[in-house]
Length: 194
Image 1 (tube, one colour):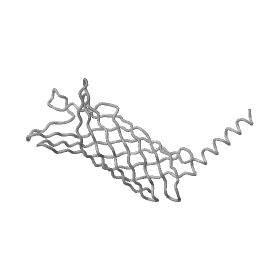
Image 2 (cartoon, rainbow, N blue to C red):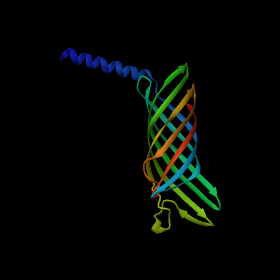
Image 3 (cartoon, helix red, strand yellow):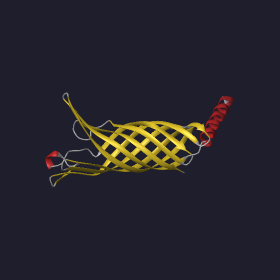
Image 4 (cartoon, rainbow, N blue to C red):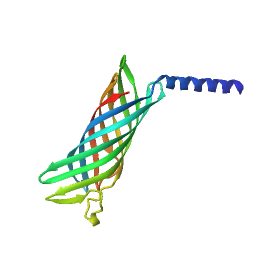
């Protein structure tokens, strides 16, 4: 029993040292989000594209050799303007990803990742012919009835080039934004690691 305990402790120390050999790092990043609001109901579907820009911070915590837990927060501004209608929204996004850092050469890594995110709507407004509608108010109160909280899945790949990072990812809401409507996006990212 004592020998088993010693072997388990030695394995734990070896795994811990391997994880500690990888350094945690932070990233400040900017994103351009090519977003789409897709409505689907009773065999009918329609979609409307809109743009967003995000600024964020993430912290990569090593779990094991080249495996990281990536925690972050980002603020996002979304907009669309067409045919006398304007849509604007401010939200916060909290991504939680796992990625594996594949070293291509010294200082150059490819990081495929997958995870979940939570998005919290802070403010939203749609204007049409001078009339303003609160995106997050209920239909009965003259709003669009959008939900302030969504959860979704995301996946993609980033390339770390020494202190810099570029990436592309796809995000898909699992919860409805408005009734029968979900949001998805392709996100283009640039950042600085430190």
